[in-house]
Amino acid sequence: MSNRPSPTESAAITAAEATDPLAQWGETAPRGGRAVLNRLLKGDVKVPMFLGQTLIKSLRDQGYNTTTSALCEFVDNSFQWGATEVRVYIVQRKRDKTFRILVVDNGQGMSPSVQQVAMSFGGSMAYEARTGISRFGMGMKTAGLSISPTFDNYTWDEPRAYYNVTLDVNEIGSNRSNLLEVPTPQMNDDLPSDIVDIITRPTAWPTNPQESQTLMATSREELHERLGQSGTIVYLPDCDRLTWKTEKKLADHAIKEMGRVYRRFIAQGKRLYVNNRLVEAFDPTYQMPTARHTQVEGLTETRSRLIFSKPIEVPVADGSAKTTRVTVKLFALPYEAWVGLGRTTLKNTLHVYGDFTVSFMRNDREVDIAATVRALNLNKHSTNNWLRLEIDFNGEADEGFGIASNKQGVRLRDFAAEKIRNLIEEPLAALRKELAELKARHVALKSSSTVSEAEQRATGAEGLQGKSLPVEAETDEQKADLEKNLRALATGLKRDSETDLQAFDRVKRSRFLTRTVHNDYYPFFDSEYKYERVILTVNTAHPFYQKVWEPLQSLSRTTAAGAAGEDEDAEANPDAANTCTEVLVGLQMLFFSLARTQAQMAGHDQNEERKQLFKNFRKEWSANLETQLRSDLTADL
Ligand SMILES: Nc1ncnc2c1ncn2[C@@H]1O[C@H](COP(=O)(O)OP(=O)(O)OP(=O)(O)O)[C@@H](O)[C@H]1O
Ligand SMILES: [Mg+2]
Image (cartoon, rainbow, N blue to C red):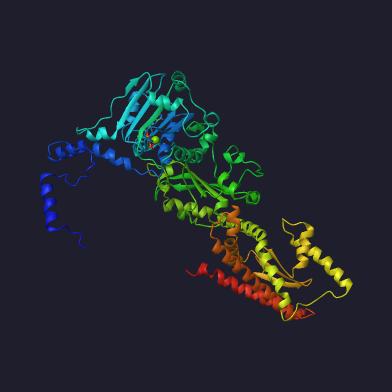
């Protein structure tokens, strides 16, 4: 199909354009803007650099990821301008379910002249500053408009002298003058009732206000007193663009995100409330002694381990000789102390699986957090949940980190990423290895149930085998010796959930036993025939374990663990999980049968020469397998 307009269509456009040069403007375009543009197109008038009527509407689409990230612009300003207490309110009207949002702080406030400038686009008292949060002169306006077409600012630098400026996209859009001006601030000795109500009444969420809400004031008079010497209020009365539809979801998300974004401010004693609930710091690196995770009951270890903290110099721009300091820290979470806590605690309370691997801190305010960062070669990996990187930089490094004016994410440029990559590469690989080993050991320990299944089935099949396994103990004395040896063997194979007696009982009844080792120089499996038992040893350090056995095992665990809610990778797919269990059992049988065959072929006297031959065979096989399994790493070379 052709995109070209048909002759009649193109004639219609041409005709319309002949009468109206703005025929292609959309229906929702501002009328004032249309009038101004028409006037400008006629010529003989100075054309302003910014067409306010249209620009202000376009800025509504600046693109904040979520309502919370837009609200952070206000909290940023509050902290930047000296607030020690900031309160955010997200309130739904009962009547028509529409939302209002308000942010109040006790910062230094603004004089009327500063306020007027501050309400203009590009107007800033910290323009291009690189040491604080503010830099672009845009945040308050773009964030406000991204949520609500009207937005009010009240500020005071002496008691009860509240200066107000309102920006209203629709009003500005219908203004017909070529040059738009910020309205003159209006002085009020009181605040409108809707603002007073929001601040002095409990919000609908959190429910149970007596217990979970700390009101700033409960009456108009008390409020004036509390608003004190100076401060600022941003008020969005007609929120028409919000990420979620309920007060609970919006406030919940704000609490969760802001606790992390402003963790350092909160740790310094600054108070931040959302819907009258105090926001606690959440530290994804688990270092802060007062952060939320430290209150989790029964935690024996509250801190991650700092692997390193290193400053590096990063060019301020590509090719620049001037550099700025960036600090990179790597942490290991206390795997051994925490892994047993269960999935619910790890996920919902400690947020270990929250995709918080790399946190970027710009002037102490988190601007991004991610599970993977391709520019740093930090890709998806099973150990990501258990390690953390925290990268601290200041505004001078903004170019390298690709900070945009809405400050809601980094887009690392290679000249900066390269420096960080070089620094983290080796320690990260070492930490990944260490964590993978810990994980493998843990999984091996937990895997006993599937192993039992294979052990039981192989033992059960003994009666059906054509050739029976060699018998060692014939005399009573030999039998007593065997019993003693089995007791010792049981001690070594005892599981966490077993008593000594239960372990002995299991070992005694089973002709097939499995254990694990973690040893870089050991074959992928080993087997021996001892005490009339086929003992299979699986090496968790070998790529066979990591690429075949362990993945199969974790998939097979999904039904049981997923149902019990204790496994981080658990997904509810029982059919696939059952198949994996069967395949794993089959795989173990393969090894058991091989081990059995070798025991059989070593004969009743367990011929040393043959045993040695089999041993060498396993060693060579293991080396060949390792080379093949690792070959995918070099295939691209
Ligand atoms: N809560 C506040 N208390 C005092 N002054 C404020 C407050 N909020 C805004 N301002 C003033 O308004 C100005 C403009 O704020 P805005 O957020 O639009 O831009 P900015 O903070 O300067 O830069 P950025 O675009 O990086 O946020 C600020 O520079 C500051 O002077
Ligand atoms: Mg700002």
